[in-house]
Length: 338
Ligand SMILES: [Zn+2]
Image 1 (tube, rainbow, N blue to C red):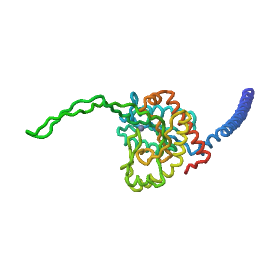
Image 2: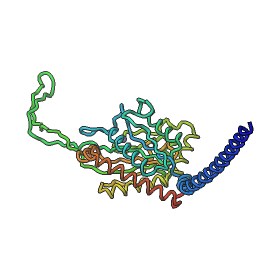
Image 3: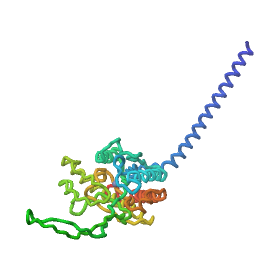
Image 4: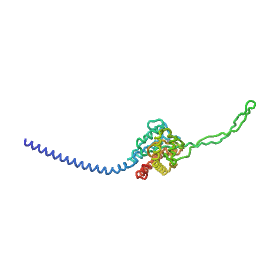
């Protein structure tokens, strides 16, 4: 029995030793874990700080149109598919280059967003989606379009018979009339342009909102005016305030995009202000632009817009503009409240 007792004591002592050993090991483990966590925090925190300080957290990419609204048609492609292809490429580039930003697309397939079939309703949905997701930048991608040039030429004459008078006074006459040949050629207009919702000096934007005037001269886009969208005076006032609040940043971003297009050797038709017709720019509570990436009506640009290299160049130009815009906003050169 004594031997058994000693045996118990030895077991108890060795258990104590094991407990001590485990205790120390656990503490060393905790100590090392703490060091690893501290190191990780030191490495990660500058990124987190940078993210949390940056006013550019969520970027909304909006591919214009969507079936059943194909937008402008070229000789073999349509605007809505090109806009989607470029939007998807831009999404991938932004996701890779700005992992700290949330990148959202209004539509990811060929159809209008939100499961809608009416393009005006879909435009309201786009703006609502951007606002509800607290977007900080709205990038709307479209293609431009102009009518072909109409030509006519006299290719001959024919004799046309006509009569005057009645009864006995009725007389037969003939005259030569020209025969015309009519044809069209593609419009040679090419290049890019980027729109912002303008607030001009004479406050015509506010005037527009109040009067529901519309004097569209926008090529390529059928007008989706604000008519009937802002029904109460409160909505009209809020829309006017939004335009003022985001104008400077929208203009900055639009200018950066056009500069990047020029660097790619594209023709630039400049930054333009709209006071009518592009409702998504009007209704989004964030800096917002609509970029026309080229003319689908021009055969060479249609090829360019459909090519992988063209879509890469365009999405690359917009990406570089976003990065430059973010740097300026982050550095405080342009205040996020401007
Ligand atoms: Zn369009």
